Length: 152
Image 1 (spheres, rainbow, N blue to C red):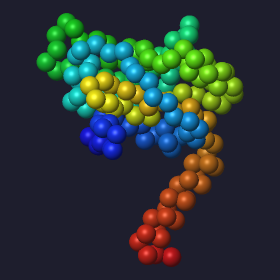
Image 2 (tube, rainbow, N blue to C red):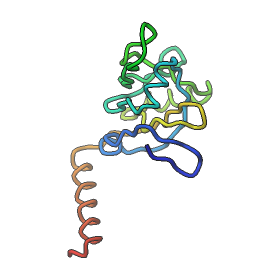
Image 3 (cartoon, rainbow, N blue to C red):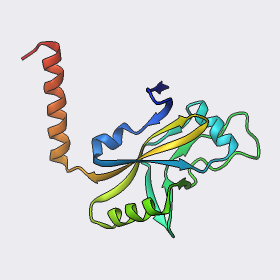
Image 4 (tube, rainbow, N blue to C red):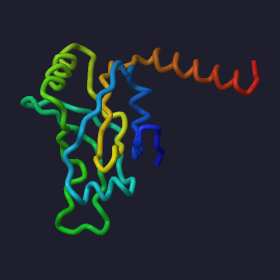
């Protein structure tokens, strides 16, 4: 688990999202969880890959965000793939709904972290990359690696 200057303790990151999408803007959202889910997150049992967000009836939900059941839990364990409600201001949700209504934009969870005692999700307003964009980014990374190694 990594942490940065602001007291965030990053639990999971969605690196695939940075490969598959251009991230236009980032937003912070709270997440509605149950006790055993928070304990699982503290243990790092989270997977953000292939997760995305949808807006239904003025509320925003994370779909496909996998939180493994808590090992020492019992009947209070929840379904690991249930849709998790995200907590944001209504004005922000309406703004995001307008963006996602446009063609090509989607909301993707980029990271899950602790901000103090609370679990937060960093959402990215993303536009999908085409195959040639991914190749171009890969070539750029390879060139940068070669420069750092001193190979020309």
